[in-house]
Length: 312
Image (cartoon, rainbow, N blue to C red; front, side):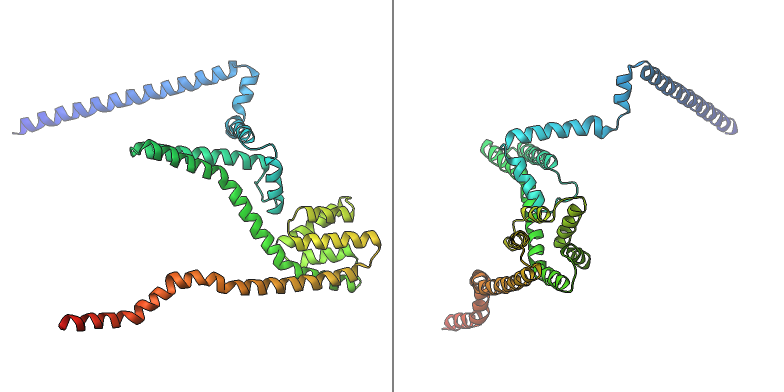
C-alpha cells in the first residue's frame, strides 16, 4: 500500500513539474513574441514617413471624430435649406448661445440623431419580424423625429430664457430708472443693474457693457441687444432708448415711462392668465373630476337600487 502511494505521489509530482515547465516556457515565449512585435512596430513607425508619424501622433478626436463631424455637417446642410444656418444662429442668440452649442454642431447633431434613431428603429423592427409597412413608417417617423429633436430642444431653451427675461424686465427697468435719477450715467446704471441682478437679462446687460468697453457705440450695442431677442417689451425699450439718444430726450424721463409701461404690461399678462384658468380647467373637470364625483355620489344609490330590485 505504501509503495503504491509513493508511486502515485511521484507520478503526480512529475506531471505538475511538466505543467509548470511548459507554462514557464509558454509565458517566456509569449513575452518574447510581444516584445518582438513591439520592437517591430517601433521600427516600422520610425521608418514611416514624417507625415504618417505626425498623423498617428494626433489625438483620436482630431483624426477620426472631427472629419466625421464635418461629413455630418455637410450632409445636414444639403438636407436642410440654404437659410437653415441663419435660422439656427437666430435661435442660438435667443437661447443665449449656450456653451457647446454652435451652428455646425447643431446641424451635425440633427443628422446623427436621425441616423441613430432610424437605425435603432429599423434594426428592432426587423429583428421582431414586423411587417414592411410598419418598418417603413416607424423608421421614417423616428428618423424625422431625430432630425427635428435638436431644433425642439433649442426652441425650448430659447422660450424658457425669454420667459425669464420678460419676468425680470420690469424690476430691472425700475432699478435702472432709480440709478439714472440718482445721478449715475446710463452706462454706470446698466452696470449696476447687471451686478445687482442675475439671470439672462443681467447677462444681456453685461454683454452690452462689454461691447461698449471694446469700442462699440452705445446705441449700436443697444440695437444689437434688441436684435438678439424677440421679446416685444425688450425691443420696445431698445427702440425708445435709441430714439431718446437721437432726439436728445432726457434718458431719465424715458426710463420712467418705460418702467411704468412694463409694470402695466406685467399686470395685464397676469390678468390674462387668470382669465384663461376657467377655460383650461374645463376639460380636466369634464374628463376626470365630474365622472369621479358622479361615481362617488351616485354609486351607493345605484347599488342600493340594484339590491332592492333583486329582492323583489
